[in-house]
Length: 324
Ligand code: ACO
Image (cartoon, rainbow, N blue to C red; front, top):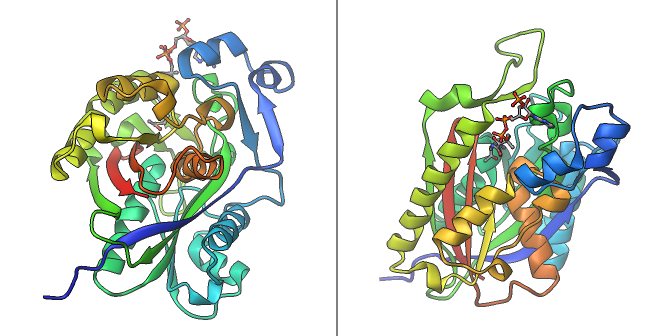
């Protein structure tokens, strides 16, 4: 019997918009009735990057992708597929992934977008891995890119302080050894909880508004329970325990949720990659942005076991385990 196809992660990249907006800026310059103290104590967020007019989901995705290719030493012409997780595409179509192909000068391969809100990167990673294991692609760019600042109701202080913009990317390649690379992915969604976190309009269902709406407390409650289940599932599928994890690279929504998950796994704070303090919640971009940072500063190294988990609108949620 021939060896199964195994998928390794060979490149990381990220892009953050030039403009930084602090919590104090929101209160003072944007006139939002809030405070640094309120935002920090409830979420851990201190600032966020906000895209300017020339910074779009596709331009940020392309820059993150370029960096991931450069890191891996792979030319864009060698890439078979581009998958972009986003809830904030530049246009309904072409897909952001196809726009990224054009940005990178790709004339072959294929690309498509994935819509799973804040869980989008885990969904895209799972989809890319499945495509690669079935022999349909050997090198795949997996990107999360978002401009949630353009989706926010800036008069709703309970949501507008929580999010930021940015893009993160990884390059996946076939050829991992046994026990290396993407070990597992687990995905879930439950449409019955759609009213907890949603956007109140789109082209297919016109409304005067197109803004993010959220029942924060309920989302928090679901996040703690569902992320725990997704993490248990990942560990069990691989015969591992929390003690085997070197790094948790969670979706960055709220420091209290992240701390809760670390506690559950008995992981000390220095084993958890946190960016929410500086990036806020960048939805599908948050995990690859955090991974990019931790790989480039030398925290996450080859051979480390990395756990990723995310929950978002849908609700959607999931986990992934990767041996770097
Ligand atoms: N500044 C100051 N006061 C505020 C603000 C603000 N930005 N927003 C709300 N308040 C006020 C409310 O009006 C309320 O005042 P009241 O008691 O006089 O009515 C008070 O603060 C408490 O509001 P709650 O919504 O009950 O605050 P809570 O403690 O639940 O914190 C939060 C809200 C931070 C959103 C929390 O519920 C949470 O973290 N939920 C998780 C949701 C999340 O992270 N979503 C991200 C997307 S999903 C994901 O990625 C996992």
